[in-house]
Length: 195
Length: 179
Image 1 (tube, chains in turn green, red):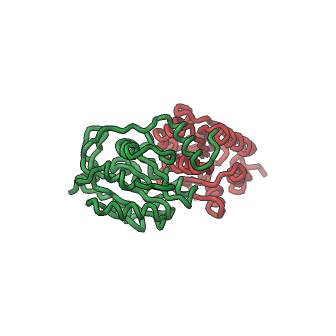
Image 2: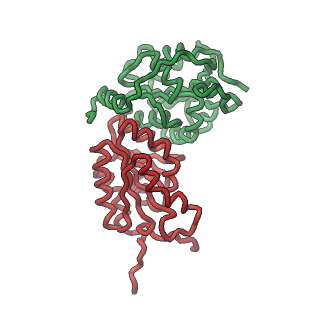
Image 3: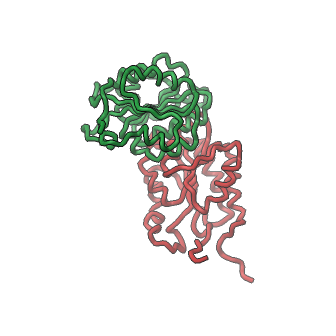
């Protein structure tokens, strides 16, 4: 049984997003959105504040429409558990420019730290591997983050990573909640009309 | 000889659904299969310019099409009326972000339904969509399918709105339970 890990979620995300170039980032609702916001707001971030379970599918849609861009989904174990079936859908599509990173603290951190399925033995990376993700790994040490970052930017194949993080709640860094404005600035950054 | 009241497998509206989607510039067709969508799904899967995405549950398609639109491309979501129930919470995403969403929903529990377990969701489908801010149109006659879907596509993509066309069970035809 493994309930999260010891890595600092803010440090993990900050390192993954360092020198991000043309990287597109989709965040699952709750703490992963705060982690990405804390690393620096960006026009090519799309933060979900609802639609729990949808982050990976939003990533799949962007990755399919923008095949030359690396797309990273940063979400939590609880959010991905609600989108369990999406792992099958994404594995069948297999875009080479999509990476899913699940920050796994083994808990529903936003709602009072109730233990999640991931904290009670369900290893999401194993689920992704069984679904057919060509790369599916669990990162428990900080030394694994640099390799993970390189893979995200390489666009060399669909990948999934669970990063075992400590079950704590750093101070919230709230991303913008105006869904229309965030949509419009995202599309504008890609050169699309916004009205 | 009497003309059958129900539609048959060669009814032109079945080809028209995909033709209208193509004409509207759709590049992505996400779906959970239903017999009423079989022709559109087959045409989408066979078209090299279309990303045909089979889903495990309908709400996956809302996230997917939101992403496709963020990435500059249009799509449509095909499902049976039972799937509308699976979508309810996720419909917050197109509502809050004012994203275009074009849904084509084949009805069950609507008319001449043999399986009464379909009736509760079928009877609630249109009202549930409207409660979540989706505009709806119903096609019960073959000649209405094309115009209603074209109009819904215009209002979805030109107005950044969630729009659903419901294909009635009277249009699709009675399901044969004994073969």
